[in-house]
Image (cartoon, rainbow, N blue to C red; front, side, top):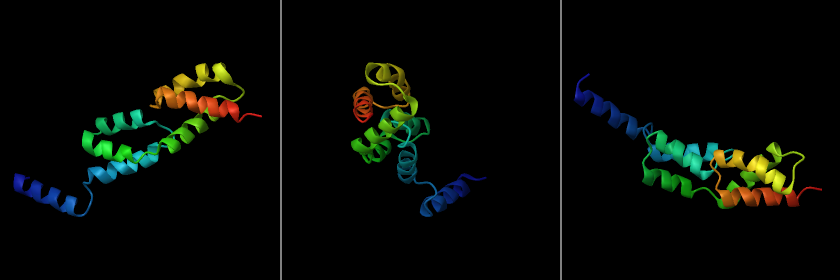
Length: 117
């Protein structure tokens, strides 16, 4: 293919919204936010070639409280029957590997322990 043909095809794809990094980044953040923290999502966006600025805007849409609730759901799932420090030591590393910030992991474990009967 000639370079002009390639450029024309790319222009048509952009016009139709098929090559929209910002929309892709927002969609990926929405999908991954249920099971991943902002750090892991940001790393995935970077690995997929999304620029820092576009990724930053998409990640800014993450609500801290929603991220905390997602972490708390994972704490309950992974830490059944555990509480307190034992819960943090068991589940904490799993959440850190999923990209949740350390302070968020501690808070999610504290909330999960406090809500246990």
